[in-house]
Figure 1 (spheres, rainbow, N blue to C red):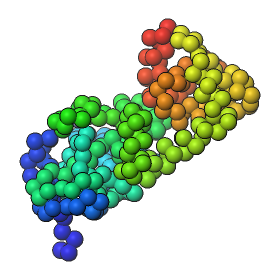
Figure 2 (figure 1 turned 135 degrees about the vertical axis):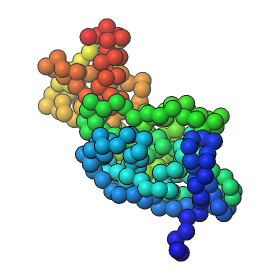
Figure 3 (figure 1 turned 30 degrees about the vertical axis):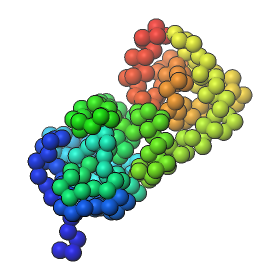
Figure 4 (figure 1 turned 120 degrees about the horizontal axis):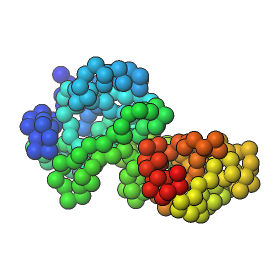
Length: 258
Ligand SMILES: [Zn+2]
């Protein structure tokens, strides 16, 4: 009624059901606003417990906010070479001209960003991909795990949710500060098999009291050549890691540092 969707649901070759354009859609045009009940992380966890995971289809719209998508929005499939993108908060736009009958897709990696602290004890979110695109990444993981090149490209093209843009931009700004640069330089020189604690890194960077800032800087570092996993807590505990604490332990064990 006035607000008719520009697509219909039918069987998809990517997975299960998909959404297919019922009219040509021009690049940059709004396809739809993604809709669902807005919920918090704790509510989402409850719903995961109550239902099988596949039945709960959350779209992250903020650092700690999700939309529990309703039909037909749950049926929009992922592609590693998508023709749509979700921007601002929940606006699905066309990033290419879409022909009538074409399946509408977006890249699920661009709408996922979790804080390990919120999901302790949960496995890292990932999905096997069946998009059949030559650009297929095979395994779909969160935005923060994408190669820097892809992250930059999509942020520059404004194809990413606002809260993710903000996170990445603040990380870049933070790590460009003089203290941030010093910290990253020190950490980049920690050899394989060795560790430093946050306090020691802060001392070496010239601000002994700034060990919490060291943690924040490393938490916002997504450059894989800087071995942040080699910085641990002074009490011998492992400390955080933005690619998952489990991965941190695995890496340190592999390097025989612990
Ligand atoms: Zn794919």
